[in-house]
Structures are given as structure tokens and as C-alpha cells.
Image (cartoon, rainbow, N blue to C red; front, top):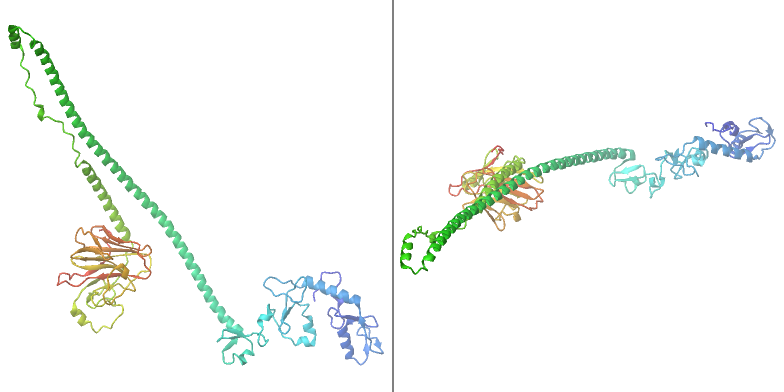
Length: 546
């Protein structure tokens, strides 16, 4: 035993026989001290009782008494050594179940006593014969949980059938036919599995961190994009307001100029009338005195000298017409409309280019195509082949994904369950077609309306015009014959939009849609209409330079 930090050494408290610190020290008649057990064992092995140190022989076997002073000093020394030299329990270590006050670190656990002991309190198990038979193991906490409740034995095996820890007796009774392995072996298996789980968890954590980073980047990009859109919109609206202001000013100026012309005309006529009034007044002043004379000679001589009045103007046909403003406002608004149309054309072109950025490469799925349809080898074209085609392909196995009866339709191989996507289909030279998207669970057999309620969001064209198929149908204006149709879907926003690609015009948008399953691009070339509708529908690559 290592020396304690005290002025007394271990030799002062050691039994000369066992060389350990006294345990129940007693004194012989000659004054020497020994452990009670040590001195009695020594005498049991001797013919004569004598002192192991001085060899004094005792005629009769002494009955040594406890040396109280030495016993107390040995206990104090033992306590001092335990406190100073034996490590205290640290977090995660097993504490001694016997220590009071400051608990020491356990060095062994007893599976018979269900207790853990530090070096000092383990001493009886190393000395007492009965205790030496106890099974000591490395320190364990919660020993009662490590014992089989049924057999009171250590749980040292693992039943792979019941996935529980068992004792040796369990394998001979309840788990007799079950495969069992040592705990260490199953521990290594489960540890390896746990490692995989932990690796999977860490991978999921990293994936989620990556997603967070992507989302933050998306938000940052969206902010910049929104700032750009707002700035562009501000420029457009500012330009439009400036144009509206100019149209208003030009309109006001036109009205004022017409009013001014009318006012000038009236002013000139009024001056002329006033001049004639003045002339007539002067004439009256000349004539009025002559009319009162009674002198015939004077009257005739004076009347002869009167000047002929100027010929009077016929004012019955002269009038001041109020200015006409008919068409003035309309023409101003026509100019404004022309400006707005130019801006709308720019915006429509920008909008189409914006959705074209979400172009996806899709190909038609022959497993979904009606038997009377013919697909190109590259899966980009489809046209109606007729009943002969059905007879030629009647050997094909029945496929639940295939459209039947009068549903001359086909889906693409690719589906979309989130985000945005866009594709274009050439419809040139066709007299009838359907185009759009459909959800995965649509009814492909029998007759059903191709409307959103049934899982179809489609644009339909025939001799009656252009229609978005809904309940009721939405009839749409057709400015010119369509050449190519673009389809844009924002899955998360619930939006399906159609565009006239050649005219760069938005045709129609279905908003507020609810998508809960994969969406597939949907095409139907319809039948050939007696040879008038033989052209194929063609999935075309996007050309943003159009």
C-alpha cells in the first residue's frame, strides 16, 4: 500500500504476520500486536504457542485482548489513506455502495451481494472464505437491472428470437429452442447497426442543412429577382403614366384650340355686326331730321343728297357653330391603347421567355398510348393510325395504364410532383387536338369528361374554336391559326397556363388548382377526321430566340 500523507508510516500500523494494516488488533502477553485472525491462525499451526516476534513461549494459549489504542489509530490511518490515495468517483464511473460521506470509485462489483465496492470495502471479499466464493466482475451500476428477475442470474446472453437479454437458465427453459448469442456478440452487431443508423442520421442532417442552404439561396435570389421585377414594373408604370399624362395634355390642348378657333370666329363676326350697327345708327341720325321737315323743296333737295347705304349682309345664314369634340377623346385613347399594346407585347414576350426557362425534356410513353395511335421512335410525335392499327396490335398485352375505347390519348414517361415545368407542342395543320396535363390516377377506361374535376387540365381545339375544358367550358378567342402551344405548370402554386408560342400571347390560365399526386403531360391528336386531321402532334424543343 502506498504511504499516506501523514507523519506516521504504514509500518506503524502493519501486522507483522500479514504485513497489512491491522484488522481487529490484539496484544500478546509479551506486548506485541497482531491481527486477531493472524495470531490465532499462527498458533493453530504451531505445536507450542509462542510470540512470532520475540519467540516467547506461553505455557497456556493466551486469550489476547483487543488493543483499543492501536485499533483506533489503525482505523484513522486506514481512513486517511483511503481519502488521500483512493480516487473519488467521477461522472460516468461506478461509486462504492458502502462508502458514506465522500463516495469512492468502485473497483469491483459482486453479483451475489448486488453491490459495488471500492478497494477498502472490497477487503472482506478477498479475506473471508465465504465471501471469496462470490463472483466479482468489473464495476457495474444498477446491478439489480442486470439480473434475471425470474432466475436471479446475470443477464449475459441475448435471445435473437425475442430480442431480449436472458440468463443461462432462460436458455434451458423459456428460450430453449431460440438462438442465443453472448451479449458482446450482439452488442457488436447492434453497434454496427447503430453506426449505420447514426451515419444515416448524419446524412439526413447534412441533407437538411443542404436544403436549408438551398432555401436561403432561393430566398436571396427571389429577393433580388423581386427587386428587379419591381424596378422594371416601376419603369413600365412610370412610362405609362407619362404617356397617359401626355395623352391627357394633348387632348386638353386639342379641345382648347378648337374652342379658341370658335371664340375667334364669333369675335370677328361680332365686330362686323357692331360696325354695321354703328353705320346704321349714323344713317338713322341723317334720315331722322329730314323725316320731320314740312318744307317740300328742302326735303326733296336733301333727300337727293343722301348717299346710298352699303348693301346689307344677309345674316340669316351666318352662325357661330360650337366646336365638335366627337372622336377627340377616342383618338387620344386609341393612341394610348397603341402604346399599351406595345408594352403588353413586350411583357408577353418577357413572360413567355420566363416560363420557357423551366423547359423539361419529355417523351411519350407507349404503354399509355391508345392502340389506334402511332408514336415515333424517339417518342416525340403522335398521330392517329386508325382501326387497322388496333387490329395489327391486338396481340399486345392488356396494360392498365393504357387509354381505351374512344380515348385517343397518350401520357409521357416523365411525371412531376413539385416545382415548375414547361413544354411545347406543335399543332400546325391539325383541325382537332387536346393538350395539357393529367394526374396519375385518372380513369383511362370507359367514357369520362376531360375536366379538372376528373384530373385533366386541357386545352381543346376543333371546328367550333378553342376551349379550356371545364364545367362549364371556357371558350377562348382565337386570333389566328395556332402553330405551337406552350404549357406551363407551377405545381406548388396550383397553376396551369397555355401560350400561343408563335404570337407570344398568353391564351389561358387555370388558377387555384389542387395537386396531390404526380402530373403527366397529356396529348391527344384526335381521329383523322376523314383525312383532314392526319398531321401529328410534335413535342418540340424550346427556341427562345423566336
